[in-house]
Length: 101
Picture 1 (cartoon, rainbow, N blue to C red):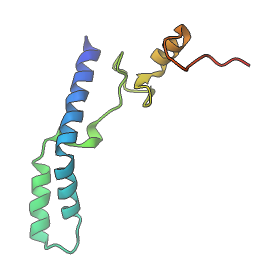
Picture 2 (picture 1 turned 180 degrees about the horizontal axis):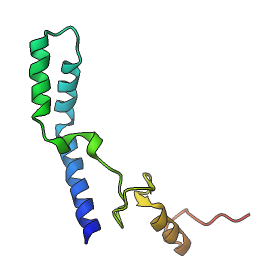
Picture 3 (picture 1 turned 180 degrees about the vertical axis):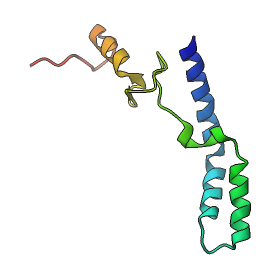
C-alpha cells in the first residue's frame, strides 16, 4: 500500500512538471538574461517562485513500478535491481536471460 501511494505521488509530480515545463523554462531564461533590466528579472523570478514546487523536474525520482523503491532503479525497465533479477530468473522478461559462460 505505501509503495502505491509513493508511485501515485511521483506520477502526480511528473504530470505537474510536464504541465509547467515551458513556462518554467521561460521564466528561468528571463531571470538569467543579463540584458534585461533588473526589475523585469526580479518580476520573473517572483513568478517562478510562485509556481508549484512539485512542478520542478528536480523533485522527480525514478521509482520501481512494482515496489516503489527509489534506489538502484534501471531507467530502461523502470524496476529495481531486485525485482529485475527475480523476473529475469523466472524468465518473465523477454530477451533477458542469465549469463553463463
